[in-house]
Image (cartoon, rainbow, N blue to C red; front, side, top):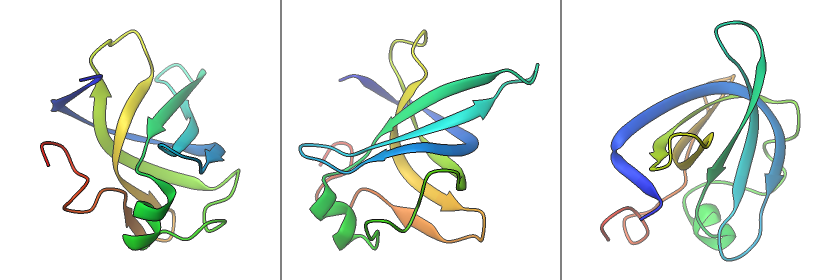
Length: 106
């Protein structure tokens, strides 16, 4: 209920923190806005075990890595926050964070 699954977003930035913990993991990234100012965005992801089942391995994406995140924005647009659907590394590796049993509406 915290995310608007009709409001898809794509955000590009640099990983500042990866938090793999239950019940959900988080990817925190620094994003430059149009004026060049850095804004921090937080994306909620699946459980650590669910992410591993979907191809993600701990310590693959480290602080300072450039990434693109596709997901859904928080319903409260004043927050730089979202639900992560896909994370793409600078070399094109893609990690889906939600398997069929964990995605929206499942």
